[in-house]
Image (cartoon, rainbow, N blue to C red; front, side, top):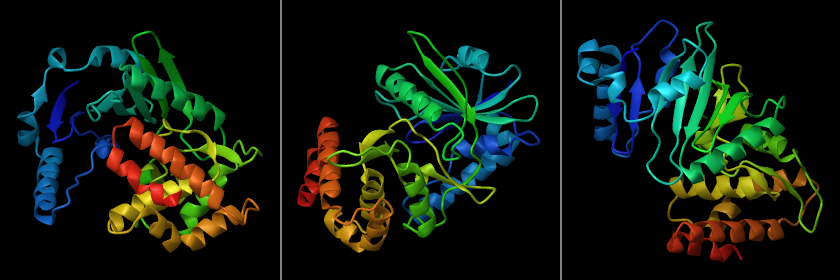
Length: 299
């Protein structure tokens, strides 16, 4: 199978020849740039790469010269599958993501990890997907394999698009409430399953007009509200970078109130403080001291 390398400033992608029914394989990459003129040029090149064989031919890579264990990964997937690859952002959590097309026409998504931190995240995602089986909130786990050297897993492919607007809305709120009702436990503060990176780029509006979450590798049991505070502060910071996390929460107070009211909680300040403490610890662990300071106002 021919593969063509598509290089970006962050990572590399490998795509097969375009085939009938295989357009979704190109969904691993989405042209993006903050500057309109650059974005227009990137989109133009992406279009030429996808539709012009001459352009792709300049990027042809021999299977023997792959910079990743191509043959090993292919052997882990259903026989005869056609694959596209995203090499992932370089770093300790780097992993290879794939979209695949089986001979019977079924689509799938897969991840392959070899770095220790990445393998831990993949093991966690496998465990979470098992616990969410049949809920309709996440992809269904199809297969997984692991050894001392790698962790591999394969899921159904959640096809659709990200929400048109990154702003919080009732549909996203209802999705979050459904997720939070899984593993709900009482205590000094109620806890539940938390996605860990509840943001619009991990939300898919499917072709059946259903909202689902992907990329569950950071999921775990956390205090109620962690995900809604993540959404409000992360997305809000992108849209209005001059506002502090506390101001962003105040701006979205209506949705925060509705979220906690669905669990019978009126005073959510202790939950906000628990979120801030977790975020501060997380940012400090990454060496992001200045970012950690942003959350101190919430304490």
